[in-house]
Image 1 (cartoon, rainbow, N blue to C red):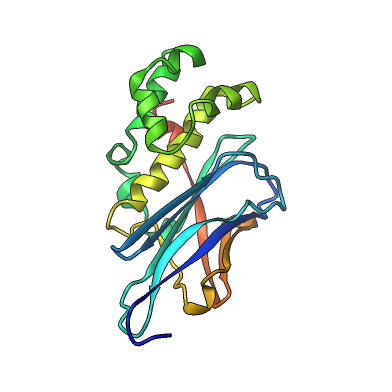
Image 2 (cartoon, helix red, strand yellow; image 1 turned 120 degrees about the vertical axis):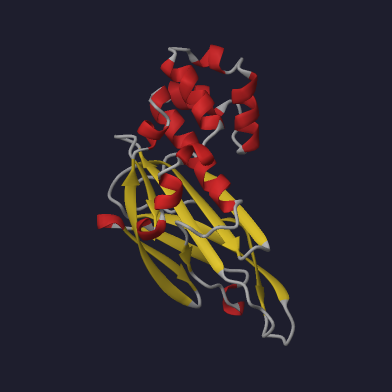
Length: 224
């Protein structure tokens, strides 16, 4: 480790040990106010499966480094559409006012609540802009519905993506878990293990951090 601040990167993957099929997982990472990285996996993650590694996750090392790494994970159970997030002990601020971070998903939910079908929804300019903003191709929605996902659950999935990205792009760390990346972690893959009973472990080469998860009623927040 040098005497000055140096850039490093690694990757992140999510391991599903919940015992349930997940329809999506999203991860947000902040390195203090310097770097903000968001990743999402919108294909099904089966029990015991690990997502492909995504990156880069950016951070600094060095004696002069004062930053910290903060993490947020959201996911949705495929069978029920229930949404979960990490670190429930400090998340009330945004959960009490979801409209502060949910904008595009709310527009999509209005279309769904109005009984619009996929073809009509995809003619809505606001919905198309929303999908582009969160990095989801237009083809995802019809493919998800054709694969058996309800439009309500699709809203919840995309709401989790928007929520993760929006919170990652703020300076607050409410709802985030601290897990510091070290020089030894550079070029490797940090694994986030979603376990039974809402246990979550962040495992990097340099160490392990533990946190918990909680269900939140995203359907109610979106008025579905």
